Amino acid sequence: MLYIKKENEPGFLIDFKKKYPQKDYDSPEFAEYRPKLNQALIKEQKGICAYCCGRISEQKSHNEHIEPRHPGRHTSTKTLDYMNIVAACNNVRTCGRKKDNNYDKEKFVSPLDEHCEDKFTYYADGKIVGDDYTIDLLNLNDYELKNARKAVIKKLQNLDKDTINLVYMNEEDEEYQPYFNVIKWFWRTM
Image (cartoon, rainbow, N blue to C red; front, top):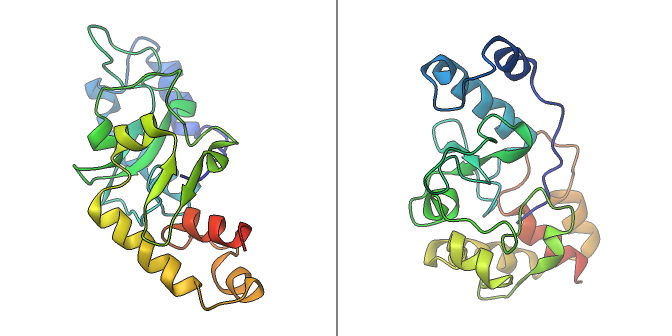
C-alpha cells in the first residue's frame, strides 16, 4: 500500500452535490459523472491501484469507497465524499472487489493514512506482512500479487540505491511504476 495524498475535490463533484444535495453515488443523476471521477482518481494516484499498487487504467479500475456504500442495512453518508473514494483494480480476488462491503474502520489500514506505508513489509518471495486484517480483507497475498512483487524485488536486487532512485522513483513522473510501494520500501531498507 502507498500513501495517497488527496488533491482538491474536483469541481464537477462539488457542483453535483450543490445541485443535488439529496443524491448519492448510486443515483441515476450521478451515473454520467462516474467515469470522470475515475479519471480524476487514476490521475491523482499516478496510475496505480490504491491497495495493491498494480497498474490501473479507466478500463481496469473502479471507484472504490473505503467506507463501503452499503455497509449493512443502510447507505453510507460518504458515497460522494471525495476523501472516501479511491481508484482500485478490478481483480475480483483482491483489493476493493474482494473487500466488497466488509470493513471495520478501527482495524482497516487506509491508503489515506499518511503512515500506512510503515505498516507493511515485503519479502523476496513477494509476500506482504504487517496488518493482518487489511492484508486478509484485500487478499494482498494472492498468488499473482506475490509473483508480481517478487519480480519487482528480483529486478531491484542487483541495483544500487542511486540507480533505483534515478530509474524508478521519480515522484514527478505522471505515472508511478507498478508496485511503487515495493520499490519505495526496498529503497528505504537498503
